[in-house]
Amino acid sequence: MIPVESTKGSVFSDGNRIYTLSYNPGIRVYGEKLVRISDQEYREWNPRKSKLASYIKVGGKVFPIKRDSRILYLGASSGTTASHISDIAVDGRIYCVEFSPRMFRGLVNSCAARPNMLPILGDACNPAEYQFAVGSVDVVYADVAQKRQADIIADNMDLFHADIGIVAIKARSEDVTSQPSDVYRASERRLRERGFDILDSRDLEPYENSHSMILFKRA
Image (cartoon, rainbow, N blue to C red; front, side, top):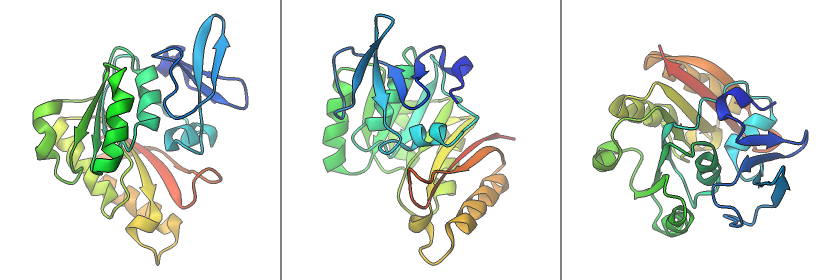
């Protein structure tokens, strides 16, 4: 279930739950369970609170985040998933973009003890706003609840020269009248039109309703 060749041993599964090797032992980010395994501390990665964890739980086969990856995270919220990415990309950098000032305050707290996470208050629809703080990245991860989700991540990937994209498609944010499966297919088509190849696409049921995760690369 876990592609350990990509994560260099920083992700552990006991067959039921997923854990990441803690960047800051003894510190909880969102009340998650801490466990000791072979004298190392791991944080439980809850698939009902993280779409990236739910993607792994539903059988996702592609996991492009490595120890030294530079990741642009769009829609980082208060930092739940970003903190687990921080555990994995310990020698990399996570640029965490969040639009809501209320959620941004929680994100700043999450980043405080994690030097590889940088909080950025900004709008994912206007990547030029935060271009000065980011530079080029390896991966763009997007989890934004609005229309044009495929174009938003594609625009960011073009500006920041990323080759790999991960997008959590929220079907109800795109079109409340269409079937989620139709929205997912339309998002995949749009990504292909923008010059990307689809690597994997997974419905996130039962962990997330009307959500899919699409992983893709530059063609």
